[in-house]
Amino acid sequence: MAYLFETEEHAAVRQIVKRFAATHVAPRGAEWEENEEFPIELYRQAGAAGVTGIGYPEAVGGAGGDLGHVLVASEEMILVGRSVGTTVGLGSHGIALPPIVRFGTPEQHARFVAPALRGDKIAALAVTEPGGGSDVANLATRAVRDGDDYVVTGAKTFITSGCRADLVTCAVRTGGPGHGGISLLVIERGTPGFEVSKKLRKTGWWASDTAELTFTDCRVPVANRIGPEHGAFAMIMMNFAGERLMLAGQCVAIAELAYREAVAYAQQRTAFGKTLTGFQVTRHKLAEMATRIAAARALVGECTTRVLRGEQAAGLAAMAKNTATDMCSFVVDHAVQIHGGYGYMREVLVERLYRDARLYPIGGGTREIMNEIVAKAEGY
Ligand SMILES: Cc1cc2nc3c(=O)[nH]c(=O)nc-3n(C[C@H](O)[C@H](O)[C@H](O)COP(=O)(O)OP(=O)(O)OC[C@H]3O[C@@H](n4cnc5c(N)ncnc54)[C@H](O)[C@@H]3O)c2cc1C
Image (tube, rainbow, N blue to C red; front, side, top):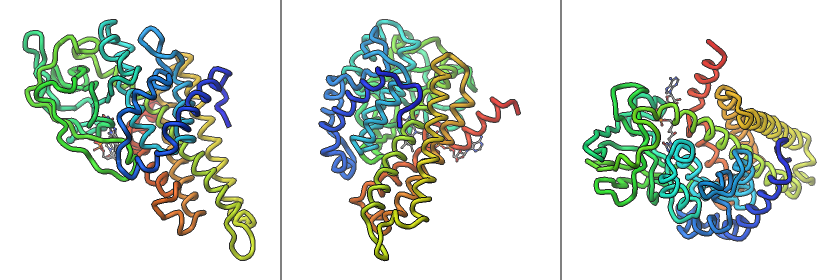
């Protein structure tokens, strides 16, 4: 089932990504998940195939389109490529670049955005710190102005693509305490004092790298600041709203894939002389999975449409993320159950999807923080 907002343009995007994922990802995605890394050439291949630029204005080197095109592109990557880790690693520019596109100068577009959309540079976003991720207003990484540079000291953690990133859109404290003292700096790989201190091992998303980064007296040119000094909190929150819909869309795609796997398995596996779909309890389980996927897709689609119309939809986006993550947790769990013992085996796709799905109520703002946003939007 497609999103209700989809047009012929979205169908064309689906075709482009389907072709790319079938050729470049599906044949080796499972191996990359086991190896906890996909080849770095994939960035360039995705750039050349026009996949990385989907959703970005042509003026900054993109292929055109909007958040709706991003959603359908990542759905095809997951459905056809069958490697969530590769999808999110390859897509880390999707959270790193939007603030630069929106608030950066033409020079910053040329230096940072265009090379990342060509697949020549890897981009990551670094907001979360070892001391806390939810409480963004209290982040501690310090950037002190010294002439034409900022001197940055601090650490970031859980950074997707951080191990291989050429540029990191990094939230730092340039001013006083609270949300009014935060700026965004693009910190480039090779800057003295910028170090990947650890590659982190995790429950799922294995093919994507996740890093802890440290900055020790790291001199970053003022020319790398995105937007006004101390003015980044609103940019970060705006970026989160888009990220939440992208994550919700990934949940819809993961659940759809797990559901298809469960249906195929239930149609051929026999027990007590009939296929699993011969049992009403299995049919109802599958029906419940399909229903929840359809409901989450409808809400994610509606919220995306409202965002694209320019409506304030922070509360609805938070609702969509929680609805989609809950749905996905439910669907992958049932998909494993329908597979019986095979569902617990490493070589079976739903086992991996079950682990991948656990990230979504945490990343990009936790389930609890989403409810805080909903409560605020509802006015209590
Ligand atoms: C695989 C992975 C990839 C990630 N990628 C990135 C990335 O690329 N860039 C990046 O910047 N970050 C990234 N993150 C970080 C992610 O966004 C944070 O983990 C998340 O925002 C939560 O922050 P935290 O882990 O510090 O948890 P904490 O903020 O310490 O929260 C711990 C618990 O307390 C709860 N809690 C906190 N405050 C409240 C409150 N006010 N009310 C109720 N409950 C509360 C939380 O909901 C949570 O359950 C990634 C994380 C993971 C696991």
